[in-house]
Image (cartoon, rainbow, N blue to C red; front, side):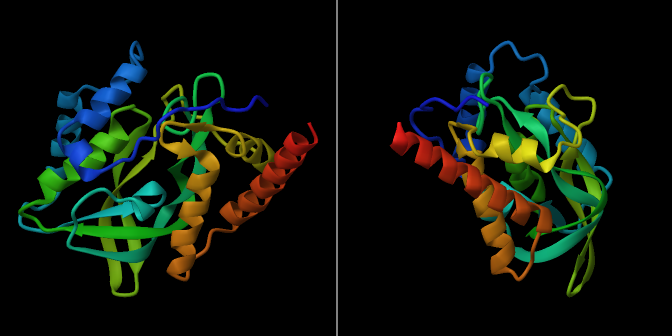
Length: 239
């Protein structure tokens, strides 16, 4: 597999850049011509439709399982670990920007049907939930590769109904079920304006471990990616 070229200045996802729209505007420029990108109006309509199924006087929980865990970039009242039921974390979405390029695509995590997955819950007070949830909505939904769903999350304090982002099987970026060797080979080389896929994997595992959780498949991928990075470093020094 080819190796990602120098991706230039790093971009960091922040609440401010999501709130003023500058992050998404820059991403749209980099992906100009992509017909699957959602408009700002479509993103807001999706959020409004989701919250229409939730009592207006109740707080809203959001379940994060990837970068939302270690860089939430939103203001929340509380967070706690939990396990989503009926969905598992999967490297099933190709990334052509952010942590990949069209020439060397990366892979991103999404929830896919079946099993369970540990992650983090974030609580938003009812009064501010719509404004604050617009930030992760802009971040995750603008490519069209994710769908928003209500999910059940088990916590030590009992089950919680939360919204989360799951893979859109109808999207051209949906990769389906890939074998671990293919995933590891991709994660070891792909990178983009947000950083590398290898960093994303390590950050995700670090948060899970900090809360006494684990993901055995991600741990196997971590070992496979580390082996490939060592081989690349050895080849570079020898050459």
